Image 1 (cartoon, rainbow, N blue to C red):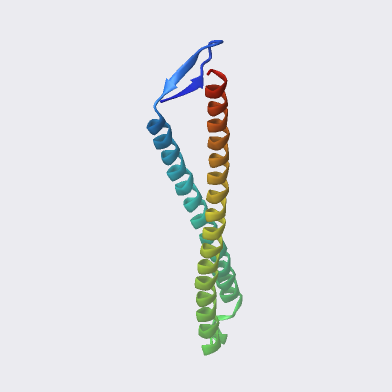
Image 2: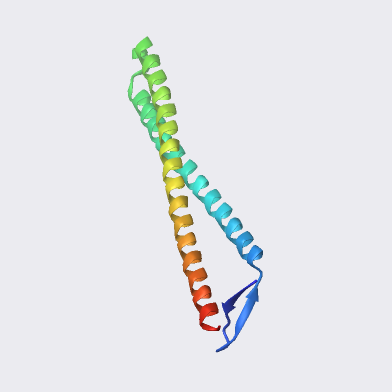
Length: 126
């Protein structure tokens, strides 16, 4: 257990350390899930722009001028769409990992500060 400040002056509440760690894990999983959803949405949005532009270009072409090059262009757009989606997904995964690392570092620094303060308090009570 560890002591945390209470709302009452001079009071502390005992908190089960494993429960606090479990709460941190739950929060990290929820944070990570939200980041994954955000990144997937961004990747889908980036890819949709390419497909929309391709469709607009197709509508601007007269039906009589349909050639094999139009099919080639459509295939290139589809390939570009896939490549943009993959690259965006990789970039957002890197960003997500960096964000998680930063958050974990901050949590570790806070824990170290807390432990040092607890050690200081224990030494001053002797």
